[in-house]
Image (tube, rainbow, N blue to C red; front, side, top):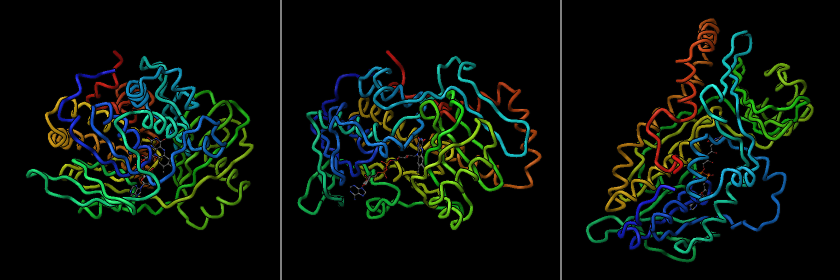
Length: 410
Ligand SMILES: Cc1cc2nc3c(=O)[nH]c(=O)nc-3n(C[C@H](O)[C@H](O)[C@H](O)COP(=O)(O)OP(=O)(O)OC[C@H]3O[C@@H](n4cnc5c(N)ncnc54)[C@H](O)[C@@H]3O)c2cc1C
């Protein structure tokens, strides 16, 4: 794993992290490994018994890019085999992008890019469980559960520190990571400006079982009624993110598996035989939201608190993992947390802009009716043009810019 000596300043600094989701726990592990004293505020109970996860917990899939997997295996000091086993990973070896009504489609194969796989679909609950367990075993972390927190900036030695309060106590920290989700109260309280654009669509997520095996292929399918993403999970299942342009229809599909199967089958066609079962897990309105600045005074917005995108391209958490790997690197190579945050603000803003643009453009291109014919030609061109394919793989896999050192195997 990439590591230089732990910087002396880190060992004398306490960093507060508000939020115990996938972003908060992963950042906690990274900052502990830099050498900081970390106090994590996670309102949910810790859950890291070694008992098997329930089927519901296993059924929340997340597509992790190859870069994210490399970063996690380095950071958690775990082999790829163990990581895959613990997270019940299904490798994605192919990505199929198509639009209903067009014969042309784009089929990307990992082997063509000298990759074993583009990424893997993992159980997000198992990842959360692994991160919690890893964090709880570190000696320089305090985990405060059971209550939400608020943070107030204070002045210390001419710089900004934080007083973090819960219903029972108050804690002093030198820096603050704000990872309290898309509705972030701390982001609002600390005056970060946010850009919000609601989409008119709703998303339904869940799992389908198919008659034919999954073969590692993920699908992104665009139709006039909205996009559909299918991620392979195990041998005969796909996790789906179905976008519906009517809230009423979304509610109806959420409670009626047969109608849900009919809509899904109609959107995807008979590419993998028949869908035998469909189970809806969640339904929610979609919106596009991001903070105009990532960094405040000795503070940083992370995860959904920084950026909340359409889930169709599976990019959100992969960007978070890179954010964490870069902050880890900047902290190791800086003389203070504040300087590391300044470097972060300069360099991470571009990646955020590109990732937002990739997902947002994908959604918008396919939402415009008069571009229908052009898209058909575009698919044909893309399928025959190695340059266009490479650009899509690079942008889709978040590899358009320099990669953090944690993502390279030593
Ligand atoms: C349907 C769907 C599919 C997705 N699929 C993918 C995918 O395939 N690949 C991918 O990369 N990304 C994907 N994403 C994005 C990914 O899920 C998010 O990037 C990730 O969950 C962000 O986690 P988070 O920790 O920032 O937020 P959250 O999970 O919302 O966690 C925030 C935490 O903060 C806590 N909290 C709230 N207020 C406070 C407070 N005041 N004090 C302390 N704690 C507080 C909450 O209890 C919660 O635990 C998907 C998203 C959706 C919706």
